[in-house]
Length: 201
Ligand code: HEM
Image (cartoon, rainbow, N blue to C red):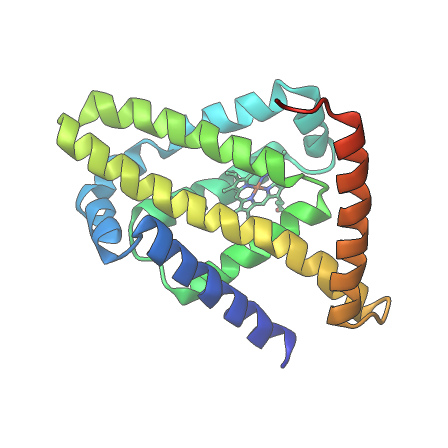
């Protein structure tokens, strides 16, 4: 199987997991579509806050020494507007997998991606509560939240996928060998943690 087919298969698997475990589906996309104009009108404020936060923390600010923040902000704004317009398709999901790789290239860890997704969702929730009736605010927030979590999961999985691919393609290991190496390392870390951590009664 070629790399593109593997990515497509992985995206399908993650989508199936999200559908079964979070109930994400057409209803959520429709909820966003119904409110799309208002949601898009929030994008500048949400993005300004997003990048202000990243620039205010030295660990994340250093990324923007290599690349102008306005360029990154414009790309993320386009991403947000696409998400809330509720017209996402398989191509967008596969593109999201690629987004993960771009962040690996810049050395941005998954935990940072997850925390910033949380940050964005919190601000979105504040706006939804101020703008819509309670029921509507809950529905819009749930739809956005499920979608963001799903998309960030693709980014996170893209990270692990790439590491494994690198070991297989570049170092020449087989998939089985990579799994065995992982299990051996897991056992080692598990033993150390069991010894170091206080026993729970
Ligand atoms: C919720 C979390 C995030 C989302 C949804 C997101 C979204 C995106 C998107 C859609 C792109 C454009 C990909 C492309 O078309 O080339 C991108 C690129 C990028 N992002 Fe993020 N991002 C997130 C978090 C972060 C964080 C935390 C940082 C920095 C600490 C960051 C830094 C960058 C950089 C440096 C690029 C590359 C831009 C370029 O090469 O032009 N992102 N991001």
